[in-house]
Length: 319
Ligand code: UDP
Image 1: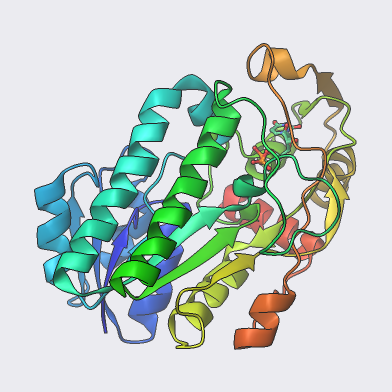
Image 2 (image 1 turned 180 degrees about the vertical axis):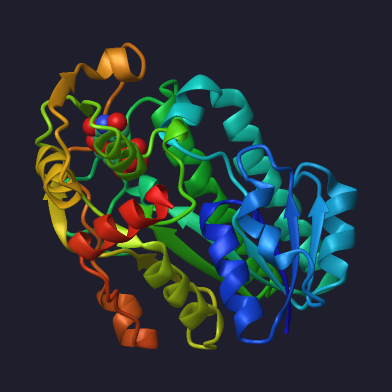
C-alpha cells in the first residue's frame, strides 16, 4: 500500500512512517517542518519507498498532488502541545480546521481512504471516570484557547464522520490520549519529556497546579500498533477509537517516579497554572481512556508499563 502521512516528520507521525516502511509499505510525508523535525525521518530519506514533500496542509495544491500519488491518507499534521495552543490560538485553529478540511476534500475528490488523528482533548474537562468513545464533551468557553483547540478537533471529527456518512468517504478516527516516547520534545509543553530531561540534568521538575491532576501515558510504539490495527481492519470504517494506556498516575507521583527511576537529585517545584501557561488557564483534573472498544474490535491493547516507558525515554534522551 502507498500511504500519505501528513505530519510525518512529527513525533507520532515519524513513528508511523517507521512502522509502515518496516512492513514493506510506501510512504509519502507531507510536513511543513514547523514543529516536525527532519531529524525524525533522516534515516528514512534514502529509502526507495520513502519520499518527503516539504509543504503545508493549508496549501491545497500540495495536498492534492500528494494525495493523488497514494492509496490511503493518515492525517497527523496538527498544531501540537498546550504551549503552542496557548501562544498561537488562531494559527492552531486554522491548521486544525482548514488543514483537515483540505485533506478530506482532496481524499474525497480522489477516492482515497483517510485516518484522522484526533485527541482526547475533545472530551474536555469530563473527569467523570474512564472516557469511552460516546462520553460527553464538557468544555469551557470557546474564547479560551484550550477549549478552542478541543472544538477544532471535534469539528475535524464531525467533518470526517459526515464525509463518511453522506459522501461514503472511507474514514477512520482515532483519539490519542497522552502519547509519549522517543523523539517527543518538551518545548511544546509535554510533561514526560520535560520531567525526564530535567531529572537527567538534576534540575527542578516543575509540577503545575497542585499535582493532584492525573493522566495516563501510552508509549508511542504501542500507539502506532493501535493505528496499524485500526487502518488494517474493515470493521473500523466510520468509527472512532480511543488509543491510550489506562494506567493512571497523578502528575506529582509522576515527578517522584521519574526522579526515582533516573536516580536524579532533582527537587520538585510547584508552579501556578497562570505562571506556567496564561491567566485563566484551565486544566483537566483527570483523563483516563476506556480502551474496551479498540480491544473488542481489533484486539489491540497497550503492552508497555509506565516504568518501562520512563526508562525507555531516559535511555533515548541520554543517547
Ligand atoms: N505539567 C506539569 N509540568 C510540566 C508540564 C506539564 O505539571 O512541565 C502538567 C500539565 O499542567 C498537565 C499534565 O502535566 O496537568 C499533562 O500535561 P501535558 O501538556 O503533557 O498533556 P495534557 O495537558 O495535554 O494532558
